[in-house]
Image (tube, rainbow, N blue to C red):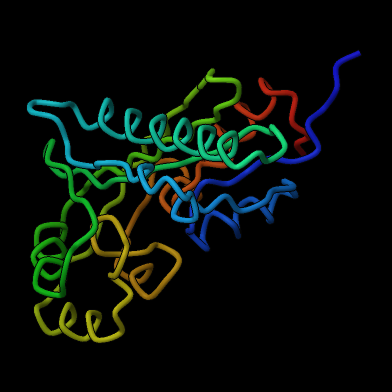
Length: 206
């Protein structure tokens, strides 16, 4: 008989990922890497030269999961699987990360305006130095956005800490004409792929 893991650790501070795990009844605890006394667990999210966006998001996601596993072992926490995720927006092969300010967010939104882009969301689970990952790719089409509409959107600061400068579950949901793929993936945690991975680690799932 296999012993099921009663819970997992979530190596993310994203409230959206917490919401999504709760939505499907996954029992988890937060694992905040910044609390690691070694202070060496920050992940460099700079893309490598000529790195393909799919390879990039999977690499970062795996690194976060493994960093989380190392952190819990260092802190002597019970050894349950560590889940991490990473999401990026891609337009024409160019990776759009999180804007550093309103000006950069405006630039991103102008480029996304009236066009289709891809949202790549990777999820990874690590345990006992073993890590597995899965990738969700969704296509999102924005309506045409005037400079005035972009300016009004930026005033609410929703763009902060959001890949591509927007959140589908927020005000920017009104910008989206069409989505093909995973809504939860665009939010930041593809639930189908997440549950499939959890099965491999004998975690209770819906």
